[in-house]
Image 1 (tube, rainbow, N blue to C red):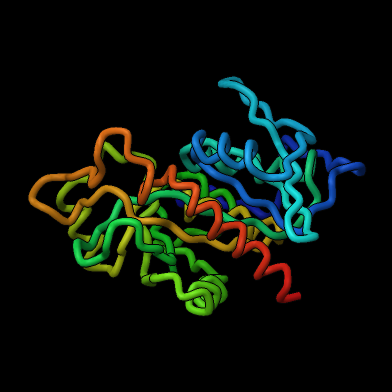
Image 2: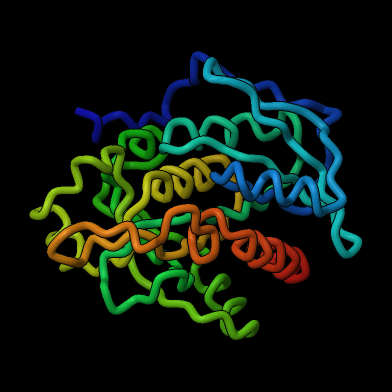
Length: 255
């Protein structure tokens, strides 16, 4: 059973070798959006310092200098296993213990406005990756949600807290499963949150997570809630990176 996969009693067969010359940064920010990556690289003080590689392609890793701080930045891949891989390989290019995780998520509550920041408090583990990093449980706690909430409130950014549903199979978000997760208190659905928290806990990394509401499941029929070509209030909105960058500053200054 996948729920029996957690093993902290024997060594891993494949190990990541830390790069002793990895670029030291205060925190790392990653995005899922190619549009945000283009905008950030063209409008910020960015320098390419390395790459993460997979069979499907390479992703550039940047050093971003901002307000006297140094941040890592890269575009990651969608889905729990693909998103976790560069976190595991983080130390081959960058040296940090802080990660800002943000992106779009489906909304399970029609009362939550599109584009509003959703802060996950726990993530339902409807994916396989996390069971290799944490003992089996229905939910995993998003331990830094209180810090993210404090940041949003201090900066007067409208937000709502609640559980999230992390799933491997967005085309199998069935009516019955939607109803169960909503009844549990889940306000969002996405594909990486529980696995990212699990690997960060396992590797001793601090992750700070928020989502922005996109498509709506809490309706008679699923709706994308955006116009063709729309960027604002979607996961490709550069304003969401601005929030992530300010959050990175905030968590670094808390030290």
